[in-house]
Length: 272
Image (cartoon, rainbow, N blue to C red; front, side, top):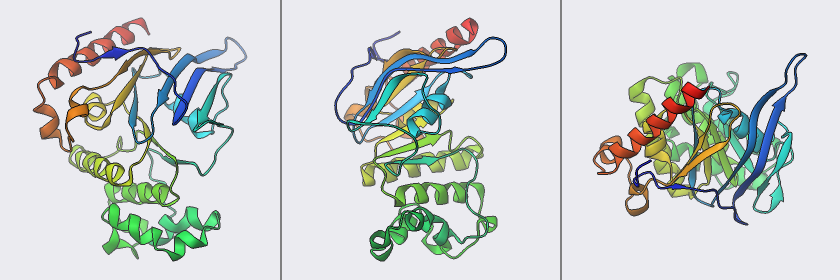
C-alpha cells in the first residue's frame, strides 16, 4: 500500500455514525452464512463515506443494517449517540432501482415522505420546491415518472430522500443502472448537492473511480465475511474541492491510489 492511500485503523467518535463490532449471520438449513464479521468504523458529520470491496463482501448488508432494514447478529450501530433500531426518518435511503411511485407526479413523489410524516411545516415552507431546484427538476415538477429518463428518476429519488432532511443519507449503488455519461453527470450533481446541503453520506459502490471522486473516506471491506481491511482518506480530497472526473484524474496521487485499491480488489477476489 503506497502512502497515497493513507491506510488507517478505524477510530470511533461520539458524533456522527458509529459502527462497532458489527456482525451478520444469515441462517440456513445447512451451514449459516457469515456475511459480515466484527466491522468497525465511524463516519464524521458532513463526511462522504464509501463502502467499497469485492462482490459479495457484505457492503449492501452493512448499509441495510445502518438503515435499520436488517438486524445485526452482533455489535452496535449508533447515530449521534442514539442506537439504530429499525428504520427512522433520521436516515434517508436511495436504492439502485427506480423507486418513484408511477401514480404520483414528480412533485408529489418528492413530497411523499413529508406527507406520511405529517410534516406540514416543511411542505408549507417550500421544502419540495427547494430540493426540486437542487436536483434540477423544477421544470418537470408536474411530469409523471414514465416521462422521465433513468437519470431523472434517480434525481427524483434523491430529492425525495433529501426533503425529509435526514441526519444521514444512505445510497446503495444509486447510479449502477445508468449509462456512463448519465452516471458521471449524477456523480457531479450529487457532489454539488451534498456540499450545499452539508450532508453526511454513506454510499455503496463497486466503481473505484466513483469512490475516489465522491469519498472523503473509503471503508474497504474484505471478501466474505466482510471485515474492515482498510480505512482510506484520499489526500487530494482534503486540500481541494474536486467536482469533476477531469479534476480528479489530474491529481498527482490519483493514479497510485487507484492502483492500490485495484490491487486490494484482486487480492480479496483471489481469497474469495
